[in-house]
Image (cartoon, rainbow, N blue to C red; front, side, top):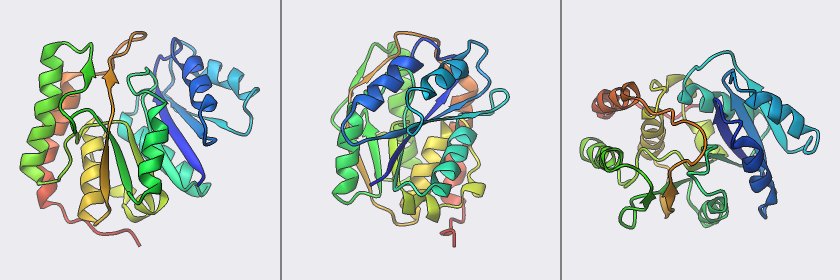
Length: 239
């Protein structure tokens, strides 16, 4: 199974080198694609330097300006499909997602899941160092998504996700509308509506210790109103 990890970055110079080293230390020979949205702090330059040490495993796509999380992942999915990767994983750069858990997500996929979700809420609440207000917003956002869509996923907003190649081929990526964290909900919902199997793997989410959060009220606003439209969408498998 050829495996690719996609990591979108914006001003992650404090984390990127350590993240690259950690992913490449894992068993299973993961490849890594960094999609940098014009980070003014030199994140992309660090990646270019690291590529000299990992020329066959580390890849970089540079974009001009902050174009949105969803568009970064869509670009990464297309890149992965063109190169025939079998499994594609999304992960943050700030170590809030433990790279070691990539092995557990891979195992769930090998055991038959089409989509695997690193879930904060499948076995209670597994979040460390978040302020209570943000924790409650995230937790009840997933409850809200489940109520509106009936999708049987406890952590619909999770950003630590793996997709089989067949899932990304089956989804009309041009039809994905949300670009912020609502993108994570829309992708899971679309996969579920198309009949793909989603499995949640319990993880412990730890808030970043370096760099600045990219969260904003606009991101949650898009997700809140976008979810209301999802049950009324016509979703067809891409041919």
